[in-house]
Image (cartoon, rainbow, N blue to C red; front, side):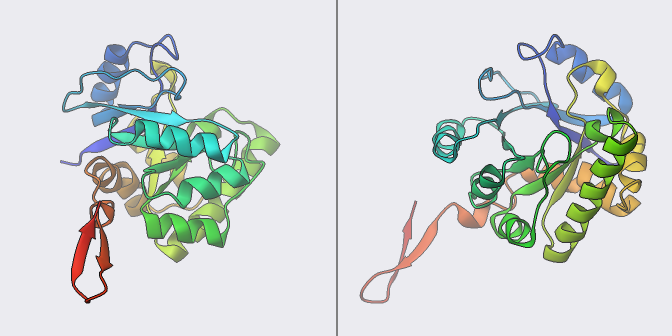
Length: 233
């Protein structure tokens, strides 16, 4: 049995949706767990369970403020995401190994995009690229076509540089949650295969929560003047 995860869910106090209600519906849909990633202005530390994880989605237009907030929250939450869209913020996020996920990399309406440099940094630093299905569901006509086009371009780059990717709902209520099979069907609209979409809902989210791609970066290997290896935190 596959363990599906939705790593971008917004709950009370940022929204009116209680965590317990979101978890109940997500479990009914077949999810093994969800991550509550309220924006940094309203994040609250909460006791975690095996199925509900607490993270933070940092939203700022300042690179210096982003670095400050990453330092503030790192190690205190299960998931550290950055709300992207701004070119400078996108780059600062993917260059930082402490960041787990770059959310909204193309902005709210797909007005921007990723490039080869950004995705290469994301792959090197273990920063997953978020494909937000809510952006497809709540867009219409020309806006939806533009969003799908941006996602198609991003997918090609992610494949080329072998970066990690996840599918999320960006749910603000129980009505925004979608069953895994629906998420996989939506991902097919911009060219993601069933195998890729399944991995983006199962293996990769689990790896993010386990910090699977961060472990080699916990210590920096430094050689001293005599050539002996030292470890520095």
